[in-house]
Structures are given as C-alpha cells and as structure tokens.
Length: 306
Image (cartoon, rainbow, N blue to C red; front, top):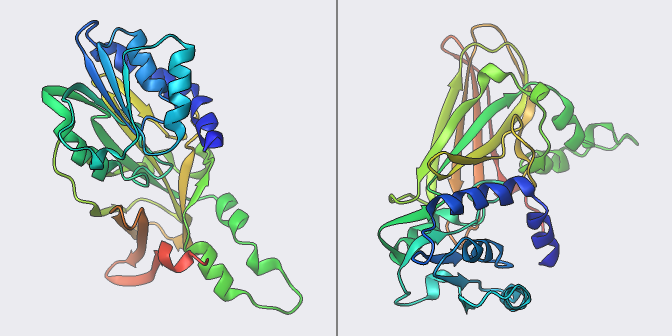
C-alpha cells in the first residue's frame, strides 16, 4: 500500500495539476471539502493549506491512520477522518467541493464512474466536483516494438508450440511507455467521454474507425485526459509530460496489414461495475470494400490465468 502511495506522491505532474485545481475553486474560510479515497490525505492537506474551512477524508484502508499522523505532523486540525468506503456513509455532511483522485492506468479501473456517481449526494447544490470530465483517447500502434516485447512465445524453440500461452498473453491489457513514434499523430481519436455530474453507465461500448491508414497495425494505444476544473487538465498522453500512469497497450492477436483505402474498425466494451473491477473486450475489424479481411476479438477474462 505505501509503495503505491510513494508512486503517486512522486508524480509531480499529478500533484501540481490537482494543486492548481484546488487553488482555483477553494474559497478561503468557507469551502468544505469531501475527499473520497483520500489515501495519505495529501489533497485534503493541500486544501487545508489553501484555506478550506473543513475537510472530510473517506478512506477504507489503514492508510487513514497514516494520514492522521501526517496531519498531526503538519499541524493540520480542520480534518475529519472516516474509515469507510464513501458508498457506506449514510447522511454525509454536504461539501462545496467533492474531490476523488480515483484515476487508474486504465481510466475506469478504480471504479471512478461508480464512486463519483454515488458521491453526488455529498455535494451541495452548485458545488464543484473534481475531476469534472474524462475523455479516453485511442490511436493505432503501427510499430512492432510493443507487440514483439510481450510476444515471447514464437521464439522459444526446442520444437515446442505455445499457441495457447500466446493467445492468453495477447488477450491482456498492458501498462507501457508508448512513444510518439509508435503511432501516427494524425490517427489519434477520442474514444469515450464522461461528465461526472451526469448519469453514466458502468457497462460501456465505444466505437471508432480509420480510413486513411496503410501499413501494419499491432494493436492500440489508449490514454485519458481528465478535466479537473475549467482550464486545468491532467493527461496521460504520450505527447504530454510523463506521469506514473503511463499508457495502455491493447494488442492485436495477430498484426494486421492495411492497404491504402482499407477501413479499420475498433469497438471497445468496458465493464467497471464494483464486482467486476474492470474488464475490457476489444474487437478489430479490417474491411477492404465490402469484404471483411480480418476480424479479431480479445477479452481480458480469457487472458487472466490464476
């Protein structure tokens, strides 16, 4: 647990973005802050230093004990610590600002849709939720580097075949440093957009397509842009300052070879319900005119071997 927090706290891009967002919305002496999944308490302590009237920290793990020590160490006294998941809190005090840094490597893997959907009841009318919106962004990966890195099975030798292991490997989701040379910049497209003050489904389907690519496609690079407050965005794009989140690589089962004029379709099905945590299914279709040249479907559940 502390190792994960160390990773978060070492991410200056993340920390500074949230600090700027809080500075923009806190009214000194008046703002009440609700911090959901508060971890070490860093964001609440920032809010306190910026003049928040009171901060409520909701954290289900024993990190809450550590955050109490950090508050004491820094002379912060305007915090209430609640060791519960926010969804278990009945009749919570209303806040001017509801804050939840529950963004995963894959944007939805920490149940941010479900938790912020419930957290709207913590918010005063006209209050501010941070983050406010989230856009997932995707691009086809046309360099072989990432695919070859994870597919070790073809070169083992010794007259042995590992096709079942290869398929399981390629039906998984990978956190990787994706480089701008791995994908064509003109092929970057939005995949899904979420506004957290609206109602959002946990089971989601998104579709995107390309018509002007030629060459090999080894999978897809996925990242997110989070609107914290108007004018302040936190991004995991490989074209932005690097963060601890890196990017997601969704591999193809086999590389596709696109000819000029081919139509490439990608559909992504995601399920982030609490009992699922996260599951992704991605389907690739390559068409040449009316003919389907290639069709592949990958499902994380088939790649998970305990």
